Image (cartoon, rainbow, N blue to C red; front, side, top):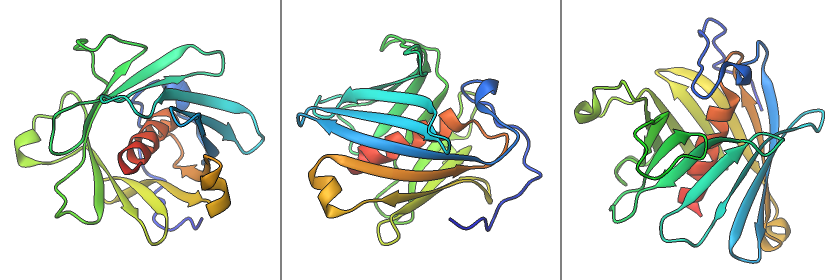
Amino acid sequence: MENSGWDYGVPIINIVGENFCVPYTMEMLVKKRIHGMSNAHYDVFDISGNLLLQVDGSLWKFQKKRVMRDPAGIPLLTMRQKSFKWRKEWTVHPGESSEDSNDILFRVEQPSPLHIKTKLEVFLPNNNNIGKRAPDFYVTGSFTSLSFKVYRGKTVLCQANHNYTWGSICKGKENFKVRVHPEVDYSFITALLVILEENET
């Protein structure tokens, strides 16, 4: 993937934990597998093949829940999709929190269908501009290029491409190549990728 739009003056973006913010471009391979038509599993590797993150969750529950874990299986965050909404909304909590927890890392909304380009809007807990629809971050995607980008304002924080073949999809396997800006929390970026993918699934 090309490196256009990389602004190396971006300050550290720590959402989940500073240990996920590295001083170099983080290149990752995200592998998605579907087991038995009922469960999705994501494995995240660095370019050396080291396991960085894991995400598990049921595909077919009416209210989706995804838990991100470190390589040792310790929960890092929980993603929950709100039900009975005409648009999809997710709340993300630290650890493996309960549904009624008020401890929120960030919230993700899918904009109006009229917003063709923007796929997700991301709000941090201290964002008081909800009524003005001013997100802290946003995600754009393209069905034609099978790619997405994460932005803070006009600054690109992440670029990702979806690599697939019809054969791999039929086998329940998909891969994503992801490049994350230096000092940007790559676990946060991974959570956005999972939410975007689950919304599109």
